[in-house]
Length: 228
Image (cartoon, rainbow, N blue to C red):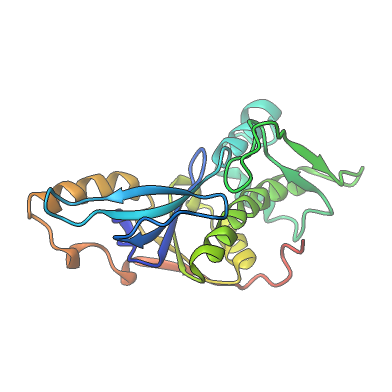
């Protein structure tokens, strides 16, 4: 959150092996009634105020792309999935839940397992690639809806290796119906550790953290992309 200068009322989602979505709640910890965790966000020094967040963790995200590559051989590299998925406009009626190791927030079902339905003889690799991307976004959407129930609408910032996939970001924006903000430097997890140290040593001011001019904004442009 610190790496993307998320202010109170703003959220960030890291898209890596498993997504982690956090909403900055400021200096007051909030107990969730919608399946989320209350967590410590950051504290920049002994005398600084503690900053809290609501968190929703997801078991599988980027790992399902690795599964397509390593276990099924549908793609040869993770970067191929975007072009493959873009070859079709829909999933062709295929639905997929990548609950390989259960479901975390907001469901908390360790007994859940992966399922795919709607496959026909006309289903091809592109449909599978697209439904995988959509499944990631639907999982994030579940957490975002829980956050909305807690705090109302908010701005979502994203980071992590999977956010290099432009189609994934457009799908996420469509499902949310709101903009998704991606930084030019998508690996902000390491940046936040550096920012925290520099803040603590008083070598960096809050105004030095990247601002909106350093971001790419994805808006809802692909109409009727992911109808439930």
